[in-house]
Image 1 (cartoon, helix red, strand yellow):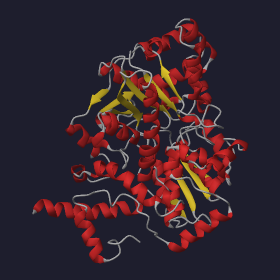
Image 2 (tube, helix red, strand yellow; image 1 turned 90 degrees about the vertical axis):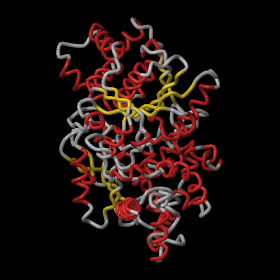
Image 3 (cartoon, helix red, strand yellow; image 1 turned 120 degrees about the vertical axis):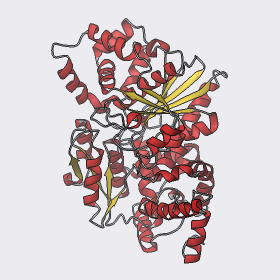
Image 4 (cartoon, helix red, strand yellow; image 1 turned 180 degrees about the vertical axis):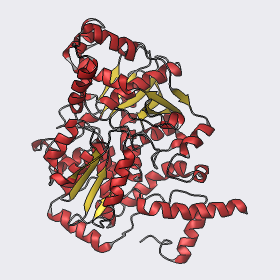
Length: 531
């Protein structure tokens, strides 16, 4: 145990010190919560011959031991094999079997986007098992509990609330680690998500369908509240798991930085002007905090116009699957966000049809003279990635960026997950067929015709308004927690790794303790303000 945390005196001292330093109560230290459960987890994984990669190894796969890297060649990237844990990073090559020197990405040309700024899209499809980068967050959220003795894989069930990809990643990690995983997601999500889950769960009852679609996150929370009554259920809520933030800050942020360095090597005048990401659980957007610290990058948060929570405290229903809405996640660093950009699901659904079929591709290559290789790359870009691209174009227009102003964004998953959505949209909107005239209309409206509507540059007052929609008391916005957390993450990682490889994954957030600790800090903060 870490000194200063077990005795009443230590707790009182810790409460006082947190007034000036907000990192301690939020970061997992390498302390054992339950020694017996930890020993059981260690023995269980040792028997299964499972070795856990550290956050540092996933951020920089060059650190992965050579023997482990060499052993991956015989393992398929979609197999439920323990060795695929070592592929949960951004540096997989196109076939996801080998390692690439630079994370997979595409640079969209002006002929496609209509803006001079290079828009760079990182490709989450190259992650193993689920073809989406959410498997990285799932790994980061479960492993700290194993390390600290808060999860017994022999009897506990890992519950993964999600609108699709996070719960698929959670089921994949659970199966590899030999524990039971439960997916909780809205019934209206794409058919492909459910098809994948049916193949991976150990029991069909482990797929729990809640009412609604992408907009119905509250219903997911309600179901998890019911499941939490069973002590064997461990809820791994991505919206409030600080490990979700940390893994994307360290790994996803490092991947974007690596790609930008690669591009800057070809054009020394490039500057990393903006990072654009739909908020979702607010994990991926954490990469923007690292990029801002290194490059002064502006951070743009994306949401659906049909559910404008950040833009105007609104709510509604939409089909940009995977981006979440109607609430501000606990881990969203709102006070460091620069812009909010609204995108309509009509744009993302239309572009999914344009890029996903032969008619649209023929139009793009033949009439618009877009590089066929670029067009083919859209196989690796799903609906939320298309929304991010639209938002990136809006940011470029709004801020009047030029040819040296690089905008970076992400495609969480691929078009493979949305073939059914494409067919549904085609049936609704183009009952008489879809031809090149229709393709041209989509291009003109949803790419060439993009303007900077539904874009809000955030003032301090705007940030506080959005922050006040979150689960944290607004007084916490006065603290320097996020700045302290970012500066301290590296030292915490080193401290954790000094306790051995197995313990090296325990940087994260113990959410069950967060509100209690935060309440204590708020009481101390309020007291200090009165003095």
